[in-house]
Length: 69
Image 1: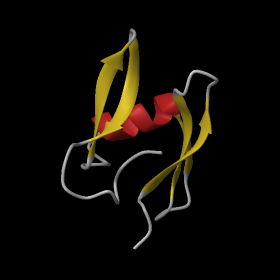
Image 2: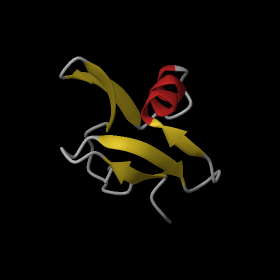
Image 3: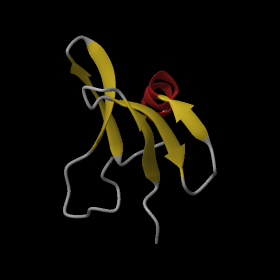
Image 4: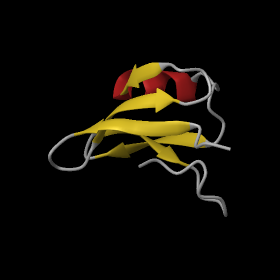
């Protein structure tokens, strides 16, 4: 089974900027993905405030299939 979310673009500092949902084919910006997580559409992900910016992160668990990267 492929990873649900893939990171498709990162800044020079390593911040994830764009994401692709491998199940639906949707491409999302960081802010769009944050909104989708907050709306409950991605239960294995959460949002953390990192350096003042809402940032999608995978929830810690024993699987690597939902890790962002």
